[in-house]
Image 1 (cartoon, rainbow, N blue to C red):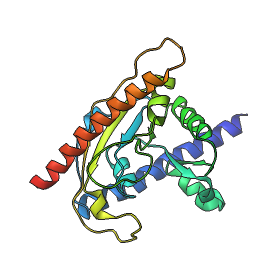
Image 2: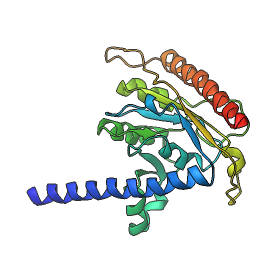
Image 3: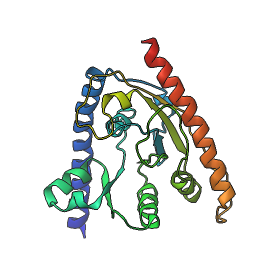
Length: 226
């Protein structure tokens, strides 16, 4: 048992070290190539689990999300990425975990809750998929549901400029300015262990939407001023 525990601890230390090394490179590229600006990082909890909820306009929102905090973030990834053991190990070390594509949403939500209950912060895009334009609408309820289920806060992040960096369907990354504004944590109402109603989940989702819209507008305004 001691050998197994030592091996697990060693793997965990390696994963965190590898993540920090890759993150340092990612942040350097974001700061220089994309001229990424970040404000509000002080709103991110220094300890404990939480849900980081950014707006989503481009694939580069993923590395930008990791650039707003030094903490190791966890991301969902389609399970096919883990078919090759070596590649899967790299994704795992970078904080990703597999979710079966096309499976019931409940399975993905359970995996997310498991990650949070282990004390690690999780990235969830409330818009679900990449959107276009400056309007934040039609959010999915997943982030709100998990927040209420676990009692953990949601940290909203407005990311502007990424849509011009890498447009949907394009493989080209253009050196356009990006800015990320981190908002104050949004805490779910205490429901004393009772099952959250649809109204409570919808209400929290609405709070997230309003906050993300304000943060996105703020980030977009900062880009235009630079």
